[in-house]
Length: 364
Image (cartoon, rainbow, N blue to C red):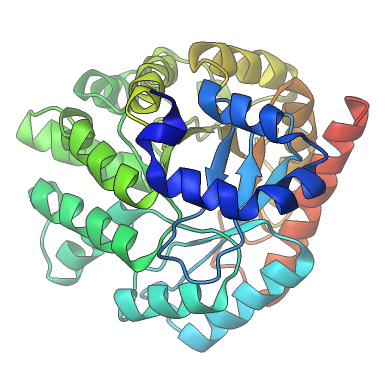
């Protein structure tokens, strides 16, 4: 059976929007179908997200740009985040991720879904961990059932794609935390899961329970954005065994998901010196069977706080030229604080420039 036969939600969504997608991307219906079948392109869109405007991620479609927004315990203004959402979309962001960890998370998510015609992504682990932190409890005590329940709830609400760190293994956590890295584990989701595994001496529940995630994703056409919990947080850590062990696992999971009719993207680095960007990207694409690759930057220097959107745009342009499909923006506030409205616009524009610079170099 084809992925369209296994994933009825995907088939219906594509049928409804195929004329627009073909026109916008300059691709034929057969080109799009073939790429989705091969797992090298995904169609982001959950039928439960009312009035969503689905988009394609993966070559040969246009490189897309994501903007991250969300509340924190230090600054929780839903009105402010909704304003950032509008600014991001007006600036040309193709998707938005709600990374909120303070306030009524369900209500914030619902408001964003209602106001956002673009696909909306989340990282369920953030909110789950914050529940425990707010109660003064160690996230290492998280009940995995709470994670799976939150994933299903968000899928039912209409979230289009979710970052889930399914490829982070118990061995990888050990290497990332104690394997000589200068910056250790910098991913928030990766650090929470690593703490859980090392404290409980158990394997990653998102890995052992991967089939459960596939069942949920299939029902709602949620695209799994397989997270890079061991992405390098300093240039000198790029390409170490911990990172590559996770990448290899992500590739096997993406193939497994495709067989079940579930769409997957792969998330990538992170801090990578400029001379290593091409090798990193080509290596990841090879190890993950050319699944759509979604990168943070990459940041080509560790020394530009306040200007990381610039450092990231350099890496982003190089990464697109090497095969990246999706750029997560960096703002001037990266590493320092939450982005304000001006930071959001600057981040989106820098990543859009990087995408076009990279695509121009490919003759598109």
